[in-house]
Image (cartoon, rainbow, N blue to C red; front, side):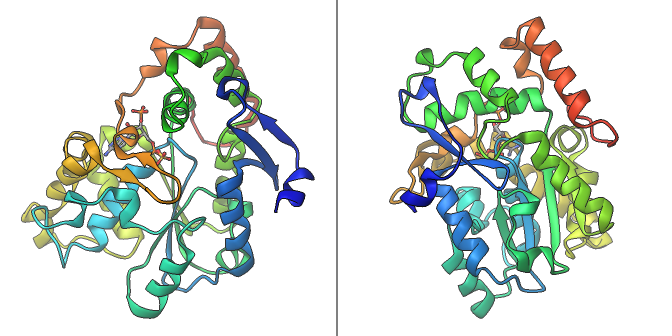
Length: 311
Ligand SMILES: Nc1ncnc2c1ncn2[C@@H]1O[C@H](COP(=O)(O)OS(=O)(=O)O)[C@@H](OP(=O)(O)O)[C@H]1O
């Protein structure tokens, strides 16, 4: 692996004091640990027809989508008082393609649990996923809040003091496309193009739309993944209860998400870091006017010809 990594374009983030190096593989940047998982998944993962993939670039609403999808799929077994989400952080409820292949294979053999999460770009998905008819849900978010969320998450996850990390540096890197699983716009475009080629296969959810109207988006999600709510369930408040259970305030205040650790033995990150502010427009506290102009121009240039709104 080390020899292979040397052949790839690489970028060491100056703010990380040499601790974070991204490698560009198949057009997208990743860190070594996750890149290794990506390559293993590409070589060996065999999608099953019932698999449902939850796909996203980091910091776009992944944790929320995972919680909602998990609550929807397991609602016959658990309710809002018994859900594993009360004691397990959402990332641990759904296996991650780049890291949990064994668990996914076990699910294929021993259970009907269909959810698999990944941050991979569409073109980096294992061939068996691309050639299958598996359903794909893709969540995306306003680029400015993603830049801001990334800026706060990665240094904190790596125990680098925030005061040592300049917003300008992380912003400039992001605009050059250098971010975890970035370029962000290419990540979105890959799924968008695939959805144009095979309409109906990919459900696009937008973080801001979900916040504005959680109910219709949660119903849309449930319908798309094949777990639609019945009228009786809706009347009994099942949809509302799932929305409450998966809400930012509910999840953030759970003991497990305040004090627990995600992947303690492998890639330890405090759970609380996944629940920062969840505020639309928090970017305004960090962007200069010039940054705003630059990113708006960049998005206009990169996403022209699509109906995607990232500003
Ligand atoms: N339940 C719920 N509802 C709404 N928003 C939520 C929720 N959980 C997490 N968040 C906010 O999502 C941001 C983290 O994005 P991701 O979950 O994609 O991060 S990651 O990829 O899993 O690392 C991050 O956004 P910022 O607060 O703007 O940084 C989280 O606070």
